[in-house]
Every structure is written in C-alpha cells, then in structure tokens.
Length: 120
Image 1 (cartoon, rainbow, N blue to C red):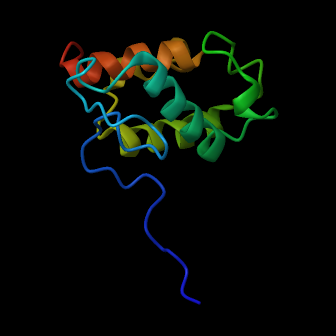
Image 2 (tube, rainbow, N blue to C red):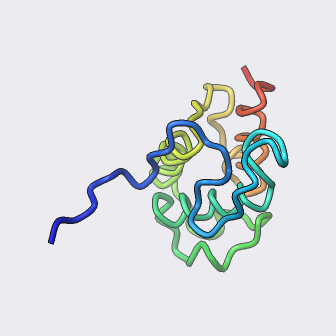
Image 3 (cartoon, rainbow, N blue to C red):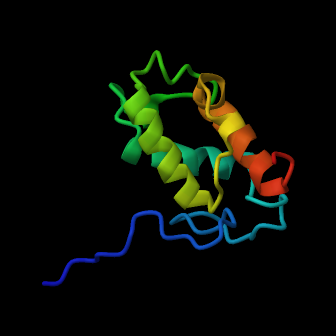
C-alpha cells in the first residue's frame, strides 16, 4: 500500500484553518493566522514534531519555558525551520534569539508579528 509522502507542513500560506479538526472560520475571522488558540495548537504540533523535547508537547502550557522542557539549540533550529514551513514565514536574524523561542506564547507573538508585517 503506498504511503503518503507529502511534507508534514506543506502549507503554502498559513491561514489557521488547515489543521485537522479545526473550525473553518478562515484567516479573517481573527485576523491573519487565525485565533491565538489555533496558533498555539499549530505551534505545539510543530514543537512535538521538530523540537526534540524531553517531555510531551501536549502537556505544556503556552507560557511554559521550552528550554526547561528540554529544548536545545539543535532542537530550536529544527523548531524554527518547522515553524517557517508551517506558517510560511522567515525569521529575520533579529528574532533568532533565546527569548523568541522561550515559550509557545513567545513564538506565537513572533509569528503573529511576521504574519502581520510588524517585524522586518
């Protein structure tokens, strides 16, 4: 039986409504990127897939310290690449720091800024 070989994060443009089981309100219901809750869910999925954490990402709260949960510099690079693909953004050099990736809430804020064009 053939396996699905499509990329895990194949969104060409993130709209917050492409996660399985999510409401189909679309990107404009809560602005670009969907709701904060949807963004956290999508970040959590990327974190589980690419972050290499020592704990299950599903057990973490949005404000939990990801470095205390086992995020390493290597895991952070994988997480960043996964986030760029998931949300169709590119993190500029000024956002490549520990504070940007310290929690899912911090990541959400950075991605929201990139999607809204607030970060150059």
